[in-house]
Amino acid sequence: MPQLVLASTSPRRRELLAQLGVHFDVLAPAVDEQPLPAEAATDHVCRLALAKARVAAEQVGPQACVLGADTVVTVDGHILGKPIHRDDAAAMLRRLSGRTHTVLTAVARVHGGAHVVHLSESHVTFRTLSPAEIAAYCATGEPLDKAGAYAIQGRAAAFIRHLEGSYSGVMGLPLFETAELLTAAGVLTHG
Image 1 (tube, helix red, strand yellow):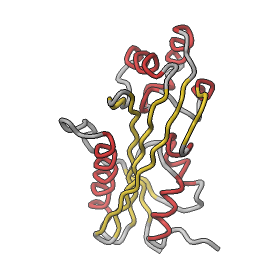
Image 2 (tube, rainbow, N blue to C red):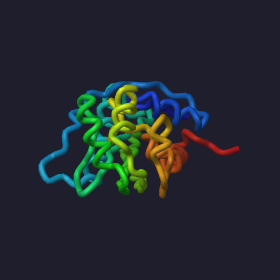
Image 3 (tube, rainbow, N blue to C red):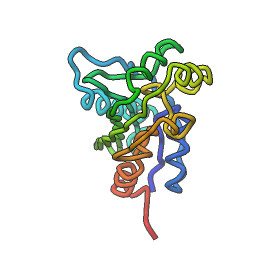
């Protein structure tokens, strides 16, 4: 069985991958996460997930199975990444309030010199948020390292009226797609 490496510093991704019952190591690849000019959101997350996996694979070698992932929130055709400060987080939450947005998470596997990328697309509907709710949530610090300025598994769960898609994908690592990639690589076996 090949060594499994998660190319991510995200504690949420580590927690989710552990749910699959596999042993893995963690590497923190340095990748520029800025969108390219006119880059579609789906292309952006797939490119970054693969770039993270490739950078880590260069460090551990082709025998390892390396996973990279990236998540973005999109609304009105705009990518909402991680907020840079509290005011930025509040602006993102005001934009999501009372609306449906899309969460895209790509997971890439690099193994034996080959790569595969899977994309998870989910639609999340927020109830209308009051300015006081947004300020109180931002004051917790929770939104500051999350795409779209919220954590579905955290306090923002109370904001979500409807979810269509993958809960784990919105958290940052779609387990259905990840399990498929690991099964195909012989890392995850059933029975």
